[in-house]
Amino acid sequence: MALTSLPKLVSLACFILLSSSSTWMASSARDFSIVGYSPDDLTSIDNLVILFESWLDRHGKKYESIEEKLRRFEIFKDNLKHVDERNRALTNYWLGLNEFADMAHDEFKQRFLGLRVDDRLPRGNELRREFEQRDFESLPKSVDWRKKGAVTRVKNQGSCGDSRRANAGSCWAFSTVAAVEGINQIVTGNLTELSEQELIDCDTAYNSGCNGGLMDYAFTYIVSSGGLHKEEDYPYLMEEGTCEESRAMSEAVTISGYHDVPANDEKSLLKALANQPVSVAIEASGRDFQFYSGGVFDGHCGTELDHGVAAVGYGTSRGVDYVVVKNSWGPKWGEKGYIRMKRNTGKPAGICGINKMASFPTKIK
Image 1 (tube, helix red, strand yellow):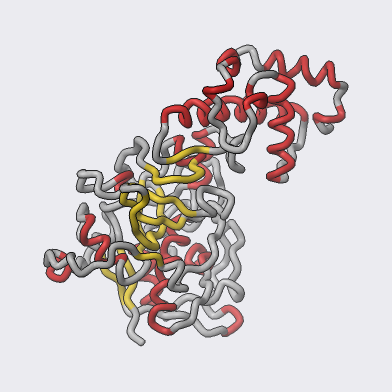
Image 2 (cartoon, helix red, strand yellow; image 1 turned 180 degrees about the vertical axis):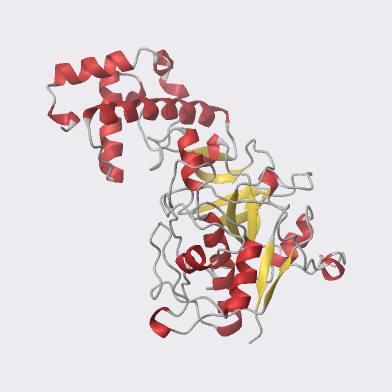
């Protein structure tokens, strides 16, 4: 039963009952801070219902029951409050009502993170001798591998597997693939979309498919298995499947190895990033991450790594230095699927721990 089919009086009565905690919406129009909406959208229950309905239409959201829709509206309301309040306080970045605005934060974390850091396969291959040489003066002031043609479209990992499990997610596969796609283009000149699904299905010695993994393990698998197939030959299913390494007998893209960037060393990360896209791990469990919409992110986050992404450039905007990060939450999130994260924070681990666990694949032509 669609909510819009209810008589207006009954519909409004339901939402008024649900909105007893919404006195915060009476703030003055000049304090309004929701990007893309007029001040009146936050000043009445009527307009709030309209805002929710328009958000549903924009993102193609549908629910199985009126009860589920009312529950999601309550969550939407709370998220709207968070976005509004945070935008009043922020200066370098802003939040928005993206496609995740009907998801509670704990639910979001369970569905869309998934990095698993452990000691089963110790990190090695660190290029300490090369990267600890302090010859960074020759690095370019900015790099953008998107403009150099080494970055494929933003993909969407979705809610892979059983989202009820903690840290369920396939982010590690998307981070790995983005880095391999990058070095393959740099070496061969061919920008080829590669298969995350193959990693999820086949890389099971140390990684756990939709239940999390780590990029270094995936690089090791790609070397030992003889490469990754194309995305079109082994498409993403958003669930674990049966390993088919020789699917369609198509050509695989190979790498020769991988290296770890020295931990907690931002200059070394930039040096690596000046040469190719790099897999990085971050803590993305902060609530602002869920609704990030644009700007240079300098919000509060820790260094407990829980999400795999790919650094694809760096630069400076209005005096604020940043790293360009490609996420795997689809092109509607952030800046068309990307986030700019502040660098030069003065903390060795960097914002959200971005300097702690970076690595990149190598490829011999």
